[in-house]
Amino acid sequence: MPSTIVLQCSKALAGRELTVAFVESATAGRLAAEFSMCPESGSVLKGGLVCYDASLKESILHVPKDMLRHFTPESAEVTRELAERLQNFIPADIHVAVTGLTCPGGSETPEKPVGTMFVHLCTRGKSVAIREVFSGKPEDIVLQCIDRIAELVFSEIPVASEQP
Image (cartoon, rainbow, N blue to C red; front, top):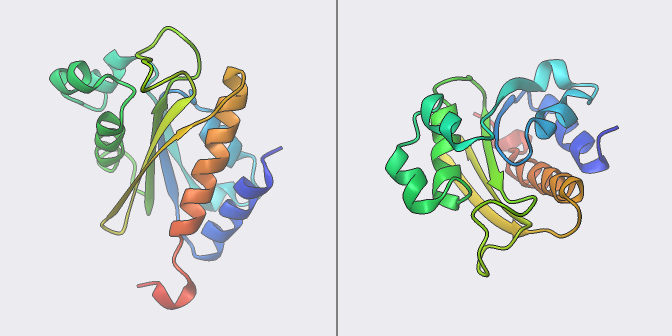
């Protein structure tokens, strides 16, 4: 069952007739899966892409190889690029990208330890980036990140008077 914040976010999206699409790396589809289990999923969730391996970020979403090499696949810069490029693949009101490090063996450094997650949201011409460091087992990190994403999306849902 989705967490309370995911359920609240989905209900709020449906209440404003807004849709969301995801491009996921570190969460490997779990983000879309959590939203798919909400009662409003049919009217809220447009879909998602899972580009876990860096080669898919390049081949499917056309993130430049030089950008991946320079910033690493798990970086704020690449996450922003993923969110922006997702808009060309899945029409939605809100586009969210997530990358990060849930276990050792990636691009971790002392400045970017395991548990570091990058999220980028694009909506209504607005772009919001967050970087959070979570702790625990890989699943704990993923679930904490999903809740943080739901909080971020929820905070960006316009109130009725702001809707176009």
